[in-house]
Image 1 (cartoon, rainbow, N blue to C red):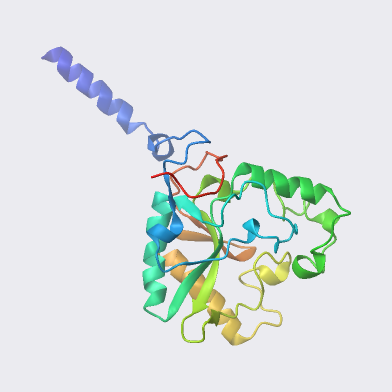
Image 2 (image 1 turned 180 degrees about the vertical axis):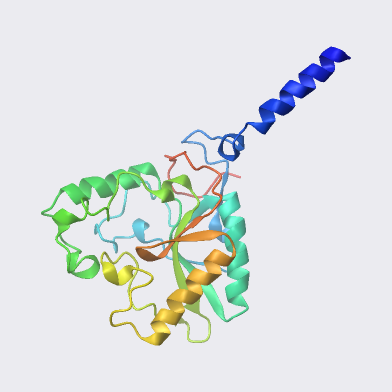
Length: 237
């Protein structure tokens, strides 16, 4: 009996010193079992997966996007469902451009950034910035929060007008104009639209990025140290 009490006490002591991050489940980088197809978890979401298409800042389909689907961790998708329900009650739907992004896609971005002669999409996505500055100024980085599976790029869709909400700028525009707090030439309506999206996401546990109005990460992401490698495609049931 005394030995049992000692063992229980030792186990309790160990549990007391386990940090929240250490207590979280771990996953191999090539294991998608903790992920879901976003449209199944959030049926009202609209998908326009830009990196599956050629309309992106590179100008080619990006490595690792085998199908035009958005994937997220179960926890992030559940939180996003709450956001979707919230904006739906106010006449909007969410529209996603990118969610989980495999490391091979990030590697593709890095290779492209180092090829300073390839400026096919400059006028659309980085008209005022020299491509040679994209990597040094961290518009392109070797690691991305998207690769951990709980980050999303999205906007709002107005159900009344049948159009995207005017945010005063486009997704993946490299420049100060994309900062959520940028005033510049934005109208009061555009600023209000950005703030509404930001408030809705933060209300349900997502934190914003200070340089991109469209970018949000789940505050308590389940895989904070894992950069996944599996390809973007429908998940096996």
